[in-house]
Length: 499
Image 1 (tube, helix red, strand yellow):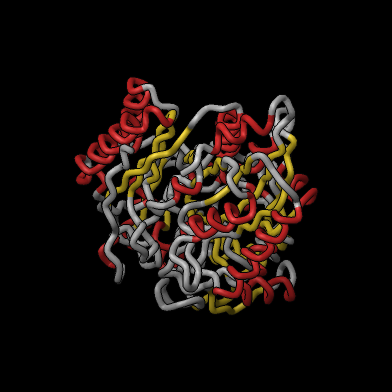
Image 2 (image 1 turned 90 degrees about the vertical axis):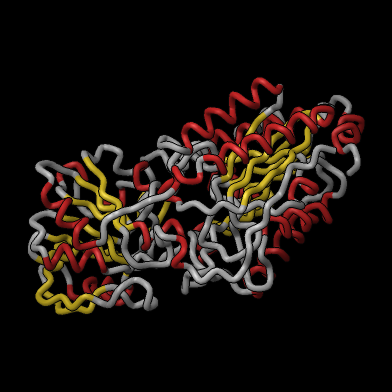
């Protein structure tokens, strides 16, 4: 690897660095049946130039954090492709995204550095690690200039990624509420490299797989692991330590926990020791990640016994934020069977949302609800005489901590009432990261006894005021018990490279 920092500093002199901003972001569940299409990227973020900047400026996103460095750099917003989690995109979709990234980066002209928003767990047909492919594509265009990138806490890092990117920064929180701050940090570290610091990133990996439900950063063992990692890094004099808990629902060799450390090049051996010691700390606490949770029937019964609400039933295996379809019916079926007096559940079912929209408020419908995407998430529930209570276009701007200020859409949305259960039927699945999903249809989450959240941990960003939470061990593409997955690859182990 050449000394890109010294080259950049010598070339810049006193002028303000010209820095490209780009991103390719998707959390891929290789067990999920619903692929990521180009339309999914167009809906979430498939933007270039000024439109990309306008979409993210002042927003709690990673690119929003990059843009906060506008007074430091001459920023060039180039291109970003992002979509909600799902199954893998096709080779054709990836080829389109890659071609746009390469072309628009080339058209932007020479740059002194690059800021990249990546995920770390993106898989497409024919490519197991899109982040590495993206970094190499960027490198081919920009040449020997420094790159800084931000990765999700659920990243599955490729061993070769630090060879392409000098500075790698990971989210410190799950739920992910520090995305903008990590973008700001990556920009600050890129500035240090451009000023002449010789920063490098070293990586270590363990094949240990852990369920996202056990990865909450305010819970043990993650809280303690992160605290000790930061202290270990401080004592060693490195710049930053990141732990990627990994995304276990990818059937690829890079899956698993990773530790990556940014340090001055002269302290690479010290950084490698920090990375390896942190991996050893993670492996020593493998038993602390083990989980046992109730099945849907017992979980619902327990929720209904709670004296006050709101109580959140976390439908972990139908985690929309993990690529699931959001149409799982196991918990809904139990709420109806047990005559829940006051409960709310969101189900993605385009067919029923359209039928309710056409019928209008006040209509009563007989419908087959949910369970239509695949055979992993339960059978459709036969509902007779469901009352259409509310209709909405499903559009909202996040007022919460996850990408605060960003626009999202659930598509045409209807609230159906069946007894005491209100079912928010959406045109498309959207992770339950925002309580706005309920407030825009007239439901105050604070006044609901039971809320079903199709999520593992990230729902806490929306419903942190819940008096209790019960995590459900139900069916789906994000099971709590990872041994249920038909894994065909063997996760790799990697010691950090000390030289």
